[in-house]
Length: 150
Image 1 (cartoon, rainbow, N blue to C red):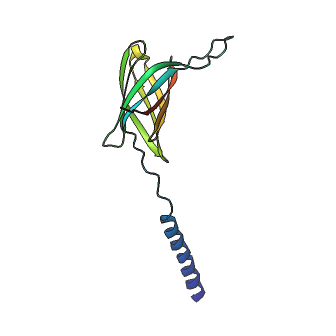
Image 2 (image 1 turned 135 degrees about the vertical axis):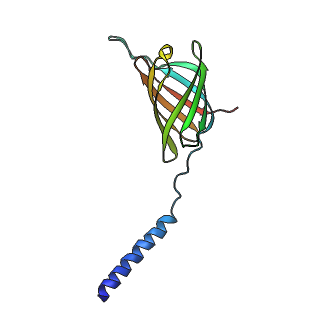
């Protein structure tokens, strides 16, 4: 019994020691501050038709403005605005989860028949960059945003 107590005590001391060492280790990743103003570009991907060479780069619309607000329930809302052939403004609810120093987003949104219908998208944002990819029945593309200077 005495041997058991010594072994148990030594094991307990090792476990507690490891716990203290780990608790003094690097702090867990802080939640990134992704709320606020963003600016960048977005573009459509146009797959080549049979026999055509792929385009060097996707068609890019000149400017995309975005404002991200965190809701009290831990979700976010992004308002995307710009002009690409005509003015547009979309308010998109975003579900996300923290992954290290970034937030990974996903969602589905119906922009209406005039604007391409139902879109599925994924995105990743950290303190400095917000990128995303989208697809629908007739559209595929991406966007890249950085913190707005204004």
